[in-house]
Image 1 (spheres, helix red, strand yellow):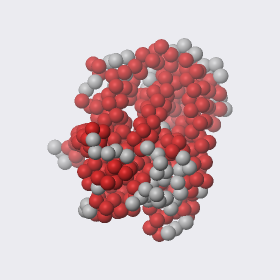
Image 2 (tube, helix red, strand yellow):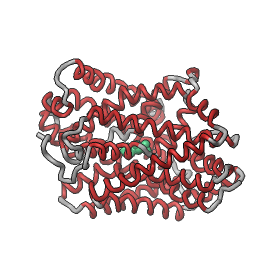
Image 3 (tube, helix red, strand yellow):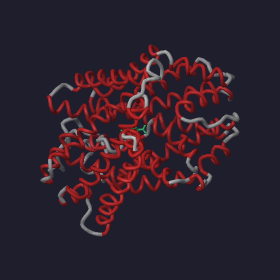
Length: 461
Ligand code: PHE
């Protein structure tokens, strides 16, 4: 029985440290870069409502399952799944959840480090005043020239990877916790600073309208899929991160309420990010461009037109880098913990080896924007898009689906009631209904819809 035991990797020093760590994992490029844009383009306030439904009905139950399973197993996702399948007398094939998580973490980190490297480099580019009163052409060329120089991009990717590995190599308390204690309060502070700045920029009303007007005419079945995919990615679900972090949660913490706080924090940051970004964009009469263009062309350009723009633009990229690093460290944890357990190896050594492999894989993403820009892999996607698609659209939903089903239907009832403190009764039935039926069905629907076009194009259907 897990309650009463500690993980060999260390423990969070309190429930609140876990909240910060999990929020650190959840809040990342997904919140600051992706959420604002897809909200604006997919129905504004209507999208926000759909997204909240997805978080409540799918995200929260699956996060509860992941954290609970982690706390019961008290080890890396792979060994946790080994323990739990024995306990549940289930087939060993369920350990697949752990393996897939380790691989997905690798894949996501490989490109995450590259994009975070762009953000790091933009701290510098913005601070030296490149964008002060710059034209759109200057901003576009600056970004394109940067991307087309593999050496420069690799340099920043390497720096980001070294920082990540350095932090995780120090272990749960001296590494992860210390970084989280430092970065998370700063992240919230910087976000508030930017919000105040955006509020006074002159475009606040327009920004609010872009994000919150209820544009139900833009809602299609596809909107639900986008919202659900976003909920998974932004809450770091489906790949064992929350299971690995759950293994270090003190036994006294109430998992249900803790998870709700984490989900609320993540959503709050995503909405604030939109409210910080769009007013600045609209105050300059710019269009809310999509993808890399929004963060690395439109935003620097917008800051450059405003008073003290170089300073606040720099603050913005520091914010993005902090958010990215607390997510990156969580991406390594499933694999790192597993290798330490399996080979009884030193954490530092494992961290360095993992970092090198991930860095190598990341070179594919770097090259996707220059020397390999014409090389396509599965379904006409380039290397970066392929890794992103397979990890985010296939592995995370599949992992989440299996985790939800395992937690609700296979784990012994005793584990559920001990971990969740839920006696049999209406609450436990509600959790079963939502976690064991609604969430898996929802995920299965998304899964089927998102991979269908890919399969169809592969087999010419
Ligand atoms: N949640 C992170 C973000 O929004 C990304 C992430 C996904 C981190 C999966 C860990 C695991 O950017």
